[in-house]
Amino acid sequence: MIQAAENTVRDLLDAYLRRHVAASPSWSAQLTATVGQFEAFAGDLAPDDVTADVVADWLRSLVEAGRSPATVNTRRKCLLLLIGDRDVPKLPEPERLPEAWTVDQVERLVAECRAVEGFFQANGLKRSIWWSALAITAYWTGARIGALLAVETADVDLAARSMVARRRKTRKEKLYWLPDQAVAAVAPLYDPARERLFPWPHCRRHLWTVFRGIVERAGLPSSTRGMDLFHRLRRTNVSYTAANGGDDMARRQAGHDSARLTRRHYIDPRIARQESAADVLPRLKIT
Image (cartoon, rainbow, N blue to C red; front, top):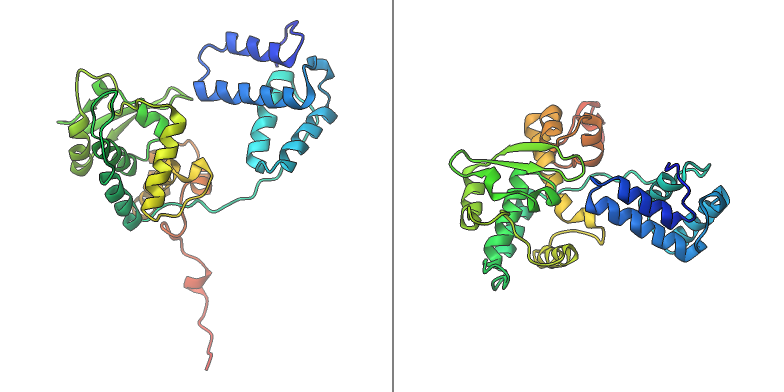
């Protein structure tokens, strides 16, 4: 909680952003959106006037508006970070099985990427090369989309078949080894004179809009959740890593400290199948 003489929740937000200069753009946007939504509901309240009942009423309004439990809990987390703890419990969230795409489905995705027509006007890159290189690199590395878009050309060594990516939230660097297939996909984009390996000339929202269109044209399963797009490719990488290299390799590939986190949220059990009762129970004598 911020200890200061701020008069409104908006003041607390402004103070937080001034002091936390290393906050990622996405986290800053989350906080800003939370305060905007809360103000639209409750007005410009002083922090001391934001009681547990007020917070609970606001969260209830989000649920009634159709927001998912995960989204509501994120909004709760953001608001309580600014105003301090209130006795408002989190919503229970359904534990869904992680869903990845199969290799066959990723091949269809890449084929659809290669069918994208035209060039980016801002940098002259061919769209089909850009999209297919991004999809192939995401498949082979399992890196987050934010980290891939931030990869600097100087951090890619095609001869050594390596790439360094940085996660914006933690600032951690991770080294990825690229197979020949990924190197061949990236090579047409590689330009030492350009800062980014995957320069995207439009806003981030447009990135998801275009990719969703590619996914749908490929006939792949997805949903309206953003986590079912690029993050599904990440789950594909981690799931096949677990299936063929074990849970610990999958954890390291995902960059997690906890194997439990990896298995709970990233490993699709349909790909990385574990031994179950179906494998060990006696067969019924059914005529």
